[in-house]
Image (cartoon, rainbow, N blue to C red):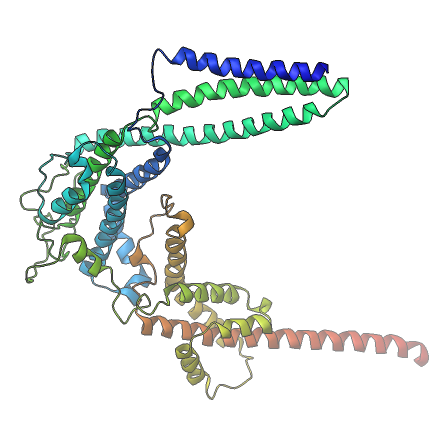
Amino acid sequence: MVLETWLVKVKKTITHSFDSSRAAAAPKKPLAIKKSSVGVVAFEIAGLMSKLLHLWESLSDKSVARLRGESICLEGVRKIVSNDDAFLIGLACAELVENLRLVAKSISRISRKCEDSSLRSFDLSFEEFANSGRDPNNWLLNSKEMESKIKKLDQFITTTATLHREMDELLVLENGLKKSLQSSSSSTKDNDTSIKEKKIMELQQKILWLRQEVKYLKDKSLWCRSFDTVTSLLARSVFAILARIKLVFGVSHGFNPIVSLPRSLSASAVVYPSENPNTFVSGPLTTKTPPNLDGFFESNSKILKPPPTTLGAAALALHYSNLIIVMEKMIRSPQLVGVDARDDLYSMLPNSIRLALRARLKGVGFSATDPILANEWREALQKILGWLSPLAHNMIKWQSERSFEHQNLVPKTNVVLLQTLYFANQEKTEAAITELLVGLNYIWRFEREMNAKAIFRCSNFNGGYMIGSVQDPIAS
């Protein structure tokens, strides 16, 4: 009876505290959230802002220099993708534009809830800016203005992420309080009651404090911002990033093919494209092409379509990446590869590689006892894996970061599509895989024969020792 009375008091205290906090906040803000505020959509918007920050960082001087000096110069890229700098740079540019287009598509959906008519038609304005460079709303920012917006974006991302964590913690505490109240109502022992009373009071204080913290974070984060405010910030950032892409990669408003990348680009350069965007320190390659009748994004999507001779067109890029990684593990430790694992590997091979492998193994004997040849094969396999394996691992990373589970997250790596097997030539890749299989077949048989000989010698040694130990007493 005493416990029930105490529980009623606790519930009344909590209710009174919540009501008093609401009443105290009422004179300051008649409504906690404005009608046009984004509310829970803040978390999605923060994700979009994170992607925009990632894109902007991908266009920094350092990132562009890395693209030109490292990404397109990978040995594997040169061997089986392309050795044409203009083509590879065009792929990098097209991927950045496509990533920006996907973000803009999400912004367009959010913009429909804006009160400003110009923001509601963001998708049309962005399309017009991409195709012609016209900006009737003056949304384009220069580099200094964009750097200021970047800091604001980063601040919003941080506070909104903190809000998400605090709201999760608050939900856990509230559920814990409910369970504690239910368990306390069924308890009869005085000692248990006093302990639970103390825990409930502590939970109550934590919840009250955390509610105030959540309220504060909502005011500071995107939660209480209007759709107009947020969309305006996103729209200006998207315009600036697209202008930066066009400036860095030398894309004119006629969106001609990518033919050059500047060797030197100052970080202080304005974001808005210059009057002659194809004028670079290194000087662009010049090509004459007929005018493009497609829109900017339609033209860009064609660049990302893999040619028919590639693994991407054959839908084999991911499968071959897994195959190469499996072989890599087997080549490192061939002595640990069993017959079943070998059969599983063979079952992963498509018919084209099986036919090529049979042709290569014709006339090869079953014996593999030459240690010199085995070492030569090991060195050859390591060289092939040295340039082929990075592309396979990059393919797995690129694909996993764009899976459904991670589509709202910012990529953790800077892997671009040209560094994967997606645009790799199918015939060249299959030739390299076949070579790996032939070498793996030899060193696998070599290790098995060496192990068999070692076991045979060991058994003979042990047998001879036992015979000698038995015969000695008889001889004596």
